[in-house]
Image (cartoon, rainbow, N blue to C red):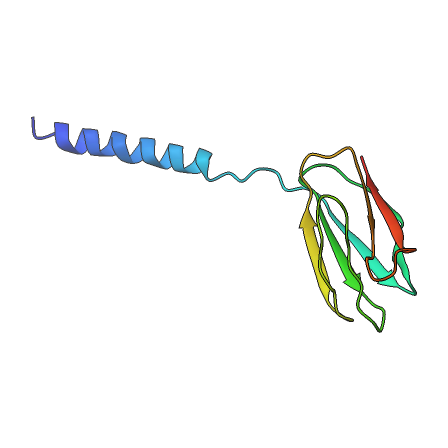
Length: 109
């Protein structure tokens, strides 16, 4: 029965390796979208996205802005800084800059 221990060890290692390889596979990552904040507008004004996608806003203006909706709020984004959100389930998201409420944009499926 001396062969039994190495045999079971080999099976355990193989099972662990297989389980590890299948469980270590990451969920497919979503698309990364970029929105510039420049000249008092969000560019592009409409982003087509889906759940799991990331949106990165970059403030290229000389003063701070926010990205504010019912689903999220960036707080102040200083000039030259970025803010990122990963989207969860949604139908459509309208957002604005709370400092400059005429700055409005949308995220749609």
